[in-house]
Image 1 (cartoon, one colour):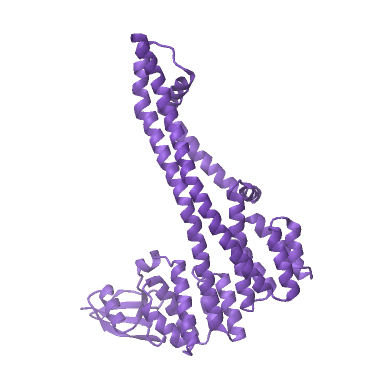
Image 2 (cartoon, rainbow, N blue to C red):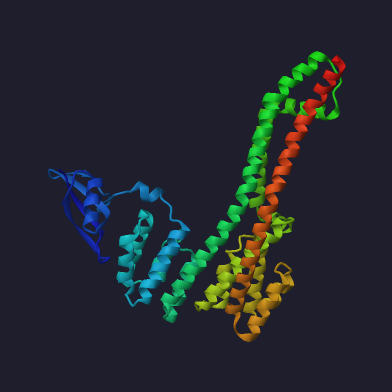
Length: 414
């Protein structure tokens, strides 16, 4: 049985090292986990001869491909944040709280990150600096709020607000995604049905019509023409579709194209106003959360800008940040842009005058969340019969175009 020299993170968050025999690296990891040690590096020695070298005098790193390929979900980060806030509120020190959470996290990747954060905190780093080393999991908004909470001495309260913000954002995202699933599903089903009719049914019916050498109505001729195009030039249609998607993707990612495309999205009927309200709700809730945590106004605007996800609205916030730094009112700048609803700018102006901007922003977010929820319900109720009608019209057109010549044939026979 080979001997392994190892390094890892012990139960107290301190770095540990030693020698342990095991059948394989996997067995070594399992044995160390039982002892509460997270294995980070190893070096195998067998009979005095090194089998696996670490390179450059260091111990070889035990790569866990499950951790590398894993993904940390937003709800897992929200749960970690809320639990950490609860432990801190109970008076448990930060290092001990991180150690307690480390032992109960099920996601290996998140557990490894929390272990590294715990080690950095034990070595004297602040929590914000430790989290900033993992931007893929803890974004700039998260780090900024934690840093503000550490400075103000109310880290537990800030983490609680941050958890509420993440859970609210997740609920809103889930509602929007849920409302979009049904239309896309119906479109996919409709495309499949029409494709089967065009490829499998229409060509067989066309052979019958050709044998009878009869005049066909315009709708039947159109249907046969479309079917012939699909059957004869399917490869060309596929190439044009792929090229079109690639060209659109490049155009929509270019600075000019992205601005125009995002502007068009905001002007789309029905969906444009909904997406604008979703963006405004996320922005105002983010601003309220950051201002309540003690983050400065300019920093909050800079971080909240990325939450919008629309370059047109992001440009408005960037101009507002510049104007606020020069002493201008936030409400005046947003009103001048014309991109934010008048009710939003009016409530922001009231909040600025009363010195309760974060409270007013939270009210705006709550109001828009309720309105988005109501609109999504109406949209879903409207789209269901509308999609059914569209599919019925399409299939009905195909069936009617096929049946008309057949009925004419029957009349001529009689």
